[in-house]
Image 1 (cartoon, rainbow, N blue to C red):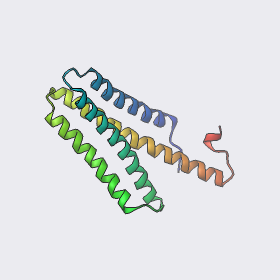
Image 2: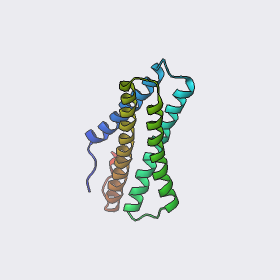
Image 3: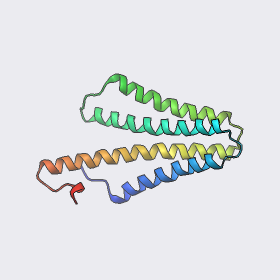
Amino acid sequence: MSRPTGAFIGASWAVLGIGALAFLIGLWNAEGLALSERGYYFTVLILGLYSAISLQKTIRDKAEGLPISGLYYGISWSVLILSIVLIAIGLWNATMSLSEKGFYGIAFAMSLFAVITIQKNTRDMARVNAVMAEHGYQTYSDE
């Protein structure tokens, strides 16, 4: 077990910032989208980010032998899949150009990947710190 490198942690946060910010700037500057459409895409982004974090945590808990509810595990999968389906349907039916649709799709996927990686890094750091504290070593958060 090793601590994630600072470069990997920083890259994960940078990818989230770039992906989510690009998505939001795109929505802000989208002249052809009604306010309700912008709200739809924003809500789907937030739903996707939350569900991806929740699913990653649930899978990690299960892998580490922590008790999880089968219902919550199923809901986590369902909501992540739902957010991906909703963004796909929204983009499929949108009256924007194909390049704009691709832009939103890539920014969405990038953001989902980034939050999964950030959650993984957070759990890895917590695990490393717990093992270090258990053996009497100074933890990384104490530096």
